[in-house]
Image (cartoon, rainbow, N blue to C red; front, side, top):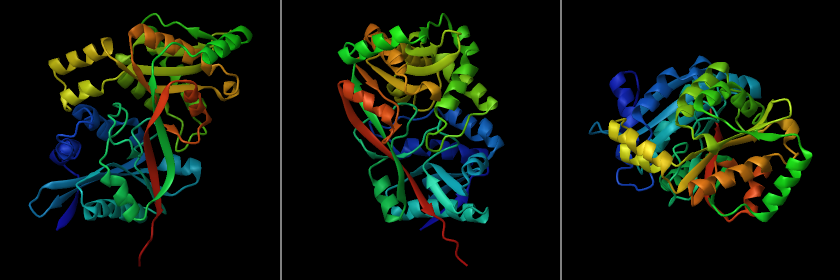
Amino acid sequence: MYFVKEVTTNNELKNFICFPKSLYRGCPHFVPSLDRGEYKTLTKHPALDFCELKMWLVYNDENQIVGRVAGIINHKCNEMKGQKRVRFGWFDFIEDVAVAQLLLDTVEKWGAENGMLEICGPSRFSNMDKQAMLVEGFDQTPSIAADYNYPYYPVFMDQLHFEKEVDYIQYKVKVLEVPDIIERLASRVQMHSKVHIRQLRNKAELIRAGKDFFKVLNRSYQNIFNFIPLTEAEIEWLIKENFSFAVLDLISILEDENGKMVGISFCLPSLSEAFQKMNGKISFMGVSRVLKSLKYNKNVDMFLTGVLPEYQNSGIHLLYHKYLNESFLAHGFEYAYTSQQLEDNPAAHIWKKYDAELICRRRCYKKKIVISD
């Protein structure tokens, strides 16, 4: 027997945040989020200015937590896209379809009470947050920007009559010398284009460039599924949360002849192993592990890439691919892991020019809300 309870106290919120660590105890591929970061996201994220958020926990008859879920109504996204959707996120549960159903039914009921017609997810506030459910690649350890889940999750989604909306794919790329075709094409683009790579001298310069960086991202991602432009407050949040750990030569900024930013990319040495050892807690030893991972690492995560729409067929993306390839070699990385890209995104075709292997597939689901009398 299970019962659901809304998260209303700080102690319940702490339990909500920590539940995955007990659920995935002993799982070699699970990467815990930082407890402090999750608390801050769930209570102070600037997207809460236009999103409604509720959280629930499911307990068994011994008063043990067996599942969690958050419901999100993103009013800004619904208005922009002409939808009436409630999202589910932070979705974790034991291997019992009854628990998954109780969690999703709770979100669906809340959505219906607020006039929503569809439920979708897993997703959080925006595309800049973790989203989608792992459906292939359960033997892979994700980056700190993605969730891991057990293989029974998508099985239960099918049983509960959710349908696929979109799939994301992710590649593991062996770091070798720049492929000849990339070298040739990048040289040709460099010769005929007035775009160049801007060399960042220090973190202060990166932070000053941060607003333009995310404004380029806003425009380059404008037609991507589920994306809504980041607000000024969200941009400030992302700069503060992400740029402190930045490695300057793993970031590329493309500028035109007038110094206008037209393309961006952001990569970081993998912090997954360091986060696993930290187990959600920030300590002196944990920070030391992060700093060590930033300096000595065999893997690099490619988090963001994008160019302005007017440049998207110009080939200038080859400039940052060549630059990053050379930087990866200089750092001694053995593998680069791409961000998750929509399966029908033409930008993913470039990995066919590398020694790349498709390793993961993640899925966003949807279902119409049936309003009962």
